[in-house]
Amino acid sequence: MRITQGTFSYLPDLTDEEITKQVQYALDSGWALSVEFTDDPHPRNHYWDMWGLPMFDLHDAAGVLYEVNECRRAYPDCYIRVTAFDAGYGRQTIALSFLVNRPAAEPGFRLDRHEGSDRRIGYALHPYAADRPAGERYGGTGT
Amino acid sequence: MTGSQRPGFDMRGPAPAAEDGPAAEAPPPLGSDDTVDLAAERKATDIDAVLDMLDRELVGLAQVKTRIREIAALLLVDRMRARFGLSASRPNLHMSFTGSPGTGKTTVAMRMADLLHRLGYLERGHLVAVTRDDLVGQYIGHTAPKTKEVLKRAMGGVLFIDEAYHLHRTDNERDYGQEAIEILLQVMENQRDEIVVILAGYRDRMEQFFGSNPGFSSRIAHHIDFPDYDIDELMAIATLLLERESFRFSEQAEQTFRDYLERRTRQPRFANARSVRNALERARLRQANRLLSAEGRRWGRDDLMRFEPEDFLASRVFAS
Image 1: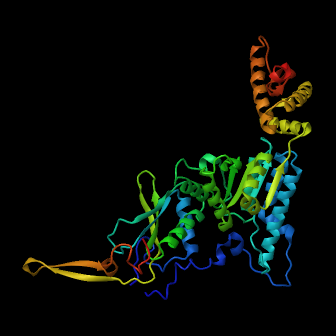
Image 2 (image 1 turned 30 degrees about the horizontal axis):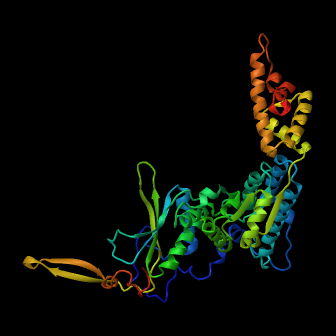
């Protein structure tokens, strides 16, 4: 199951060239970029690990691509995303965020039903990958 | 989707050719029978504007200018070769500028960044000027992120390391500078497409630095020496500076300033063009004072522009 997330979730995975262009657009807009990674694929997982500090004062996308590639080398089996923070007054939030790496095999999710009182059904999404402890998901390399 | 078939994120393999800069995408490839008009190409890239500006704004430095012209020509020809499908490996353009203070190293580095950008070698062509403080950290584990951040900031442009020999401290082998040097070397080798590193400093100390870091010396293709200016060149610089600020010498003042320079060059801590600029700044102060203190006179436009000998004669240089 191919998990999609972020700004370009409806598109096929971006190539490095496309990533470069998006990053350059963000830099030209004056946004600060950062690289984050995780091995918990749940869509409501907001706690991604930071790969280094956010990058300020960059002019060229090559610097961000360098960090992306470093992160890919260290965590080839994690989800990696690039986020762009717009510090402009009135916005002050993430302006752009997209995946730049995914594990080779993504097992997907299981739907859990919880039957409560009065036969009420609650549903939960459970990623198969999360059955294993953090760091051993997705092929056991990683953290 | 399974792991075997993934359209994107494939860049851990060899990078695609399209990343080789703007030159790769613009002009159509040529067949073996085609010919190119190098002069027209030259015009299209606008490098003459930069080279002319170098000629106009920098006095002397004949060797430096020749080398820059050679580099410009090489990059242009390489671009044409690429269009014919000939192999055009990216030349190594890391440089070291050696010379006394005030001989124009920073200025040339700035022009170089602009030039390389126009030739399509660099994506942006900005200059990031740093010294040891910006690269080397204060405690263990501080240096690598600091150096990397500076390198990332400089990517797409030129990283200018002033007084680079301070990175290496011979007396302390556990100095963090060594770590910065190692990261620099690694990036200079691997990210050659994205960054040009220029090291600058005094000649003798740079030679010492290269002597103790042979890795640096061999990764730098262009060692460019900036000679000291002679008196005529210094006068030409002074005239240029004055023109820019709408000032001029009176005839006697020109002779006085020449005397001043002759005396000044013999004194310690003479910093070539920078000393000339400082001398002129001080002359402006004295001129302003002279104009104000002369009572009961009216001054015309020309008077406000002109330096007189006494504006220089008050200097300490003449006192000794």
